[in-house]
Amino acid sequence: MITDKQKKFLRAKAHHLKPIVTAGNAGLSEAVLNEIDIALAHHELIKVRINGADRDELKHMADLACKKCNASLVQLIGHICVLYRAAKKPVIALP
Image (cartoon, rainbow, N blue to C red; front, side, top):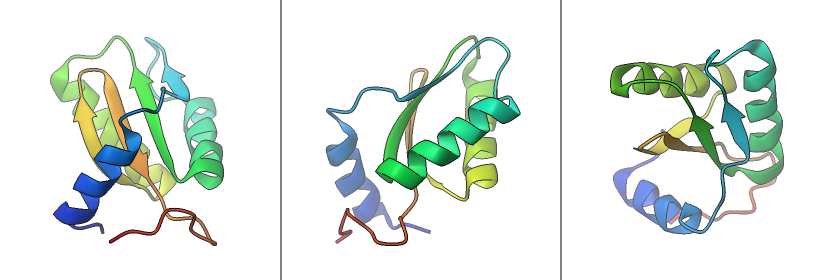
């Protein structure tokens, strides 16, 4: 679990990023979760766009993605969620 200070640090790092994975109206399928897992393994910090969801459904999908991919939710704003998972050899040094 990451601390609030680390979340603030990661939000600043993620500000310039573009969404790498986009989930369509069908939601988080196994293929989308697999892509999120691969992107996290490669980048550590990613943005995911989830289309066609209301606020509660969006929060549920973000939590599901975190649970399935063993990641931490850094930020959820609009239809964009920022996910973080440390790599085996971390590139991002958390404070």
